[in-house]
Length: 138
Image 1 (cartoon, one colour):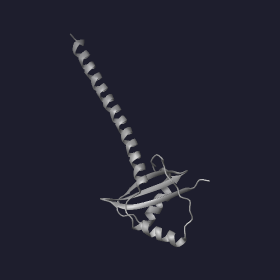
Image 2 (cartoon, rainbow, N blue to C red):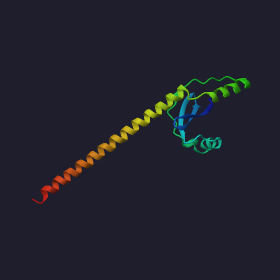
Image 3 (cartoon, rainbow, N blue to C red):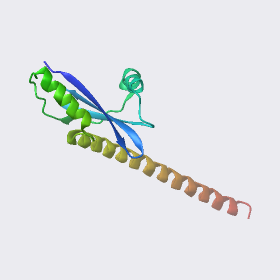
Image 4 (spheres, helix red, strand yellow):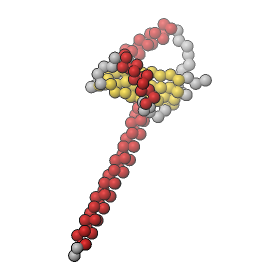
């Protein structure tokens, strides 16, 4: 049976507060990045998760290792405290975000190339029409 786990990390990345949502499903990690303006309150973070979770754009899934061990409650509490003191995001999460960024870059390049080609074609058509109009009357 596969488990689904998630983790939200909020940290300050000058000049904004950023939230990174990690989702592990079927031993694959995918990540979404949310930019907050000012430091988010607890209720704002909860509202983001409750209302906008399914609208978030998660990165493509990356294979990851999921450890399935039970922890002593005191150990889990210590680990949770340690994670709140840590800043930044995990390397797997960074890889997933980088992969998503690369995909967005490729899509943007394709779109801008199509727009450039369409604009040059439009200008060419205008030149041709203008050329024909010049010779029409004489």
